Length: 145
Image 1: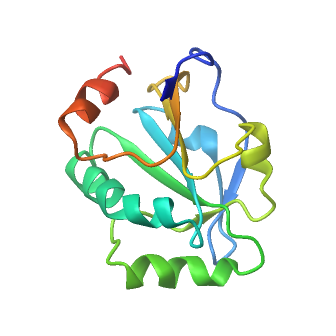
Image 2 (image 1 turned 180 degrees about the horizontal axis):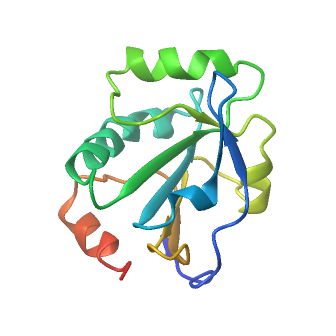
């Protein structure tokens, strides 16, 4: 079920980390639509949708940023090898080790995906897995104008 009750909300100020410790502000991704996917290696529906998210990231590379943010706590060094082992090549291993972003979004279930327009305003969010290569996905992504 797509939730549009937060439509227009600003992208939160949040600092992401990659496994090497490199930091990046979420706001740095403004400028094109942004699909944020909160997931974990232990979440079966999350893992099942990774290949479709990877294909979407490759297919729309110049016009959409797909940002997967792992909620794995305690073993951040396992995320990048996990993605590689699953054949994921276009998604980066960003981390939310403390679960702060999940708290910000009041996430109760993984995966949870939040979609922003190019100006950093929320369009919709989705709880649960989705087929990101489906025909209805194109219409959903077109909502960010």
